[in-house]
Length: 403
Image 1 (cartoon, rainbow, N blue to C red):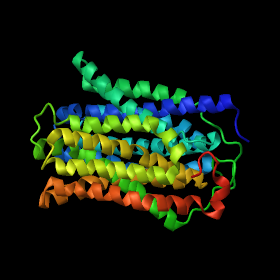
Image 2: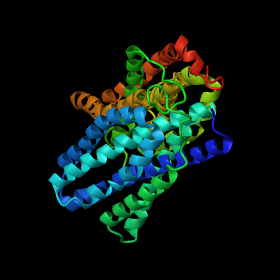
Image 3: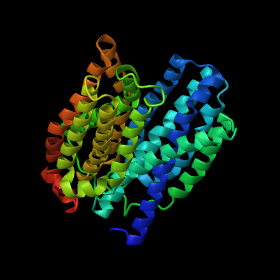
Image 4: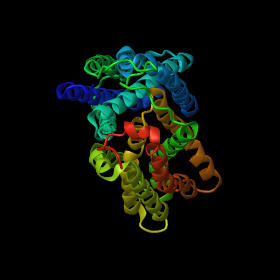
């Protein structure tokens, strides 16, 4: 039975707030890294190890979180783990030394894993009930939350507040916010055959299709990693941009990605998942092509145009994958696989591009995400057809979402 419109609306507002809160915590952590580095005297290698540990523990936790959500429902998973996962941000803030920081980073990674799976799986569940695309906007709110944390941290530091105090305050406020926002999330209409959170038994999705979806998610996050890790370095080292202008490369990418995430649901409703992936991959590939040629002609303005175009394409790739798994009747553990592909992509991206760039040039290294964007153009629509046009998936697809 579909919940009444007011219940759906309250759940959607609550999930918007939960995504924004999660993004805020992640942004606060990222903004605090220089302060943590300075307080503990870490250096790049030890700080990098702590960051890697967060990703690895988060990746392992996601697999467990998906199984738990299958049994207890996504709402319960978020109510039980959501607030606590924001509170663990206090741990790295108060770590007295490097060994303690590693333990705290692992604890934070557990929180990241639970929240990411819970939020994404519940967004898929809510979209099923709505019968139309709504997932992309949730990811846009996550990005806005991260941006707000960065601005807030800068303002607080400017007012003379200490880095530790800022991080602890962000953790406490976000814990309270997550507790409020998870309360109106959708309860399931009844426990299904797997103990999951939907009203009907989860459909069986074959290993080959799940593997294809994982590869698409991995590729999408590797493309994003190319901008996160290398956009500003490309501007500085390849285009000789000065210190004030180089950081704008990633800023333009992130702004374009946020805007198009907020606007992506109507686009997907009109085009369908397959054509949305086609156009998203094409935009990302075209954007990277402009970046690659900017060193020979066009310079910084052309590179900025390319990063903005790439950001607009990346924006909707991952939401489409989450939605497609949901349309096909996948379980929370299936959805967790896409979250895991994200962590794997963000882990592999710096190495894949960095080692190639070290042996050749950064321009050559950035051909990796460009090639992956072209791969999504060709493989994405075919994967969507194979996943959503299976006979057993036909009854799961709402007419408003079908291609």
